[in-house]
Image 1 (spheres, rainbow, N blue to C red):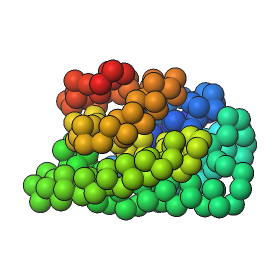
Image 2: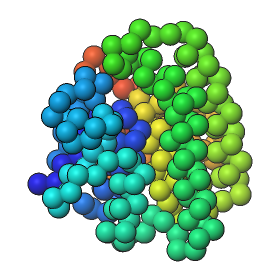
Image 3: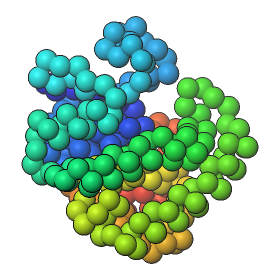
Amino acid sequence: MNRLYHFALSPFCRKVRLTLAEKRVEVELVEERYWEQNPDFLRRNPAGKVPVLRIDGRILSESQAICEWLEESFPQPALMPRDPDSRFEVRRLCAWFDDKFHQEVTSRLVYERLKIGGRTPDARNIKFGSSRIKYHLDYMAWLLDQRRWLAGDSMTLADFAAAAHLSSLDYVSDVDWNRHAVIKDWYAKIKSRPAFRTILADQVPGHPPSEHYADLDF
């Protein structure tokens, strides 16, 4: 059985889960409290990070590398464009969300509010994340005003990367969906996809999701 070692609210794991589900690759989800540095888990990924995908006798790590391996191994439905310029744009936006957005927003809000790794919430981090998410939402709205999807006319890994982060933030009610109607409409399209069902069923013990989290008519 294929297995994905993951943490429910990790946006990197969610990006891989969305890709797996979109391509209808079945996996068993195994929750991994990666911050505890379990020796068995470290043998699978010495970097001590999730996600880790065990598939067809392989052990794969790093979310973007996993997603692109899945794209090449299971090409339908396609989540990467064919031409080099469009592929570059997808990769650029994936890096934007997994690096800049994660550093400035997700890690400052989701990880702090849920006390991941036993941390004590820092009000300064939460204030900074709450401020920076506005900038990122404005940038997303600018992209979506020009394109049907974030990277172009077709849904790609860039949309999954963004939705993975925003869904984690929405779990803790940190997204102002009224700031830009175009972003809410974009997210509603992704949220309604069958690939999103297991994401919307996530529950973190002791931390129930926001009331609208699983509501498709939010």
